[in-house]
Amino acid sequence: DVKVTQSSRYLVKRTGEKVFLECVQDMDHENMFWYRQDPGLGLRLIYFSYDVKMKEKGDIPEGYSVSREKKERFSLILESASTNQTSMYLCASNPPGSDTGELFFGEGSRLTVL
Amino acid sequence: RKEVEQDPGPFNVPEGATVAFNCTYSNSASQSFFWYRQDCRKEPKLLMSVYSSGNEDGRFTAQLNRASQYISLLIRDSKLSDSATYLCVTKGGGSYIPTFGRGTSLIVHP
Image 1 (cartoon, rainbow over the protein chains, first blue to last red):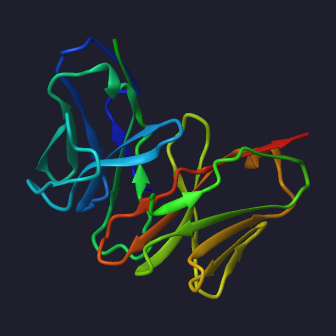
Image 2: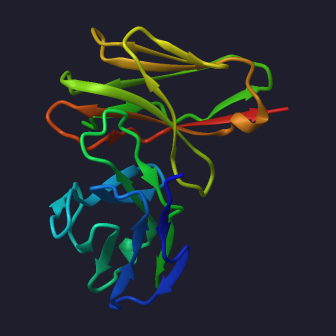
């Protein structure tokens, strides 16, 4: 079974703090994604990566950065957390050219910024 | 305009009912279509792919209408455990990134 593991299920941070959200997948997938999900807005793509050290901006990259130093790990960084970044963050992966379209999601990291 | 549109609901139905959701997409070049299910406070999981000829998986039937650019999901004999949010997803048209709708909430009550 594909396993996508997000390091923290729940985090509470203060405005201005630097926040790291880690995601690891064990299926050797090339593609990895970071989404945030908010009520009424659905899933919105923040960043994605199709290979080690490669990254592309998604729909809402402002205020975020990412790191992909190893194939299995894709990190999301909030350089200076703000209250409007309170959200559920979901990491996902899939193999390249995946015609099934199936994304394998982690369990999510619920971040609260005070 | 969002690329993938869904009625957010909630659809409130009794056990045993048949319920159908529609989803419209704006990118005519979309090539792949899917339904995901998301339980409350959980991650989305693939429910089923949607094929051009329509396909069925137990109580679930998915249909694609390319001419009108919509996808449907029919659930027969609803169970309490079907209560969830159903996300419509498209892929293709020059991008390998799936595009998610905002989801339709289903509540099945006794």
